[in-house]
Image: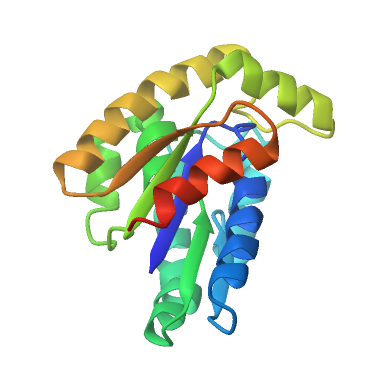
Length: 197
């Protein structure tokens, strides 16, 4: 099973990937669970992490880098894991590209770049207002990436609505879960979305 978690920066996706891994291990001991993320830790993903912090790299370049990283990520991690019978849980996938990169080059272009990639079995979108996401980003400190301002997060939140509609029209299974509350609160809601499937 291939599960992806999506949402604005600061919505809690990284935390919930780990919570879901632990829940799966408790529910099915011995079942391999592969947790991964995009940008990936691979060579293109490392370049992307630099690009997200370096505003001199134009946003029109990012959709191509994300698509290249996704191809590499699928080939090296996701598809081999699924072939072994593992559960693969990814912190971000193509829905993020549709939301984030469509602001620079349009939804049709991003959709075309990602058209050949397989749909996850389930995509969970963590819903949290942009202002709450920014408060979490500020609380954790560190260097901010190019998308981590209130204005940009609000734009991306609107783009996520369009991205969800595009994905659902293609048959993707998308579950929206409130990202509000404690990590345990959110983990319980994520589990409710996952276990029936």
